[in-house]
Image (tube, rainbow, N blue to C red; front, side, top):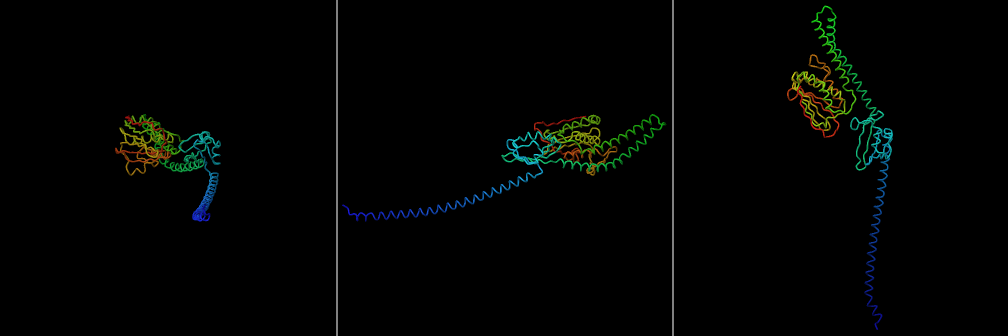
Length: 400
């Protein structure tokens, strides 16, 4: 039988080793717990800091949203937010006044059709109540789009009033010039009318005086007609116009004269994609008629006239009128658009002034120069409307 004291003595080292391992593990656990506790405290601080930042950001966003809301409420322009489904998502009071049928969730296309009567140009709407508005819109990524609508009715009226005053002032100056221009043919006509009143004239003299009287009266009539055309050159009702229609109207009016002058007319028109403008077909046809008539007057019998149209960048078309006549003297280039300036004995000096007035009112520009054949060249640049891109090019030649 074993001695208990001997057995306990043998187990003592094992117990000591076990206690040592236990103490070591306890210390490690204590250290790990301390580290874990410190990590938890750090994460808690970070979470609290993040929470405070988020709350601050949220408060700032709410403040910004409130400010934007106040701004939208106070804006004089109408603001409408439309979602990807074409549904009205938000709008301000000005928009509600401008579009009475506006309501959350309504289709914007329906609201627009109820209020808008016409769109003379992109971004330019005419409402059914007579007001005119300017519209701009921007996409909102995948949230839809935002429309800003500005009522320009009063601004347009003020602009028209200023332009009317300018025209009246110009007409006052023109009236003085016109009186000077009319004096000579009118005095001559009065003189020949006085001669015709005499009973002592034979038939040959009566015929001669009658022709001279008619010639003076026609010249006076042309002066008055051209002055009226010039004064109205910047005032017309604007609608979408195909330039080809205006050009053909001008050519139809000039057909007898083209035949009489045995003129060769060449048309070189590129694709019709860029020949649609906002304007007045009668005013444009009149301007084209004056340019062709100018070429006939200065080119003489057999003159060759080339009319070309070329699409330009940024939505515009370049029209050119060339002839092979004597051309324009360089010193006169700066004066040919001045009212009443003419180099022709029986010219009114208003034809090219009318052309310039019409072109400027259409938002375009006109320049005079020399053609490649040595004659005159007039270039007109006009802003255009987008149209379908399937129209073929046209190249025609007319020999009258």
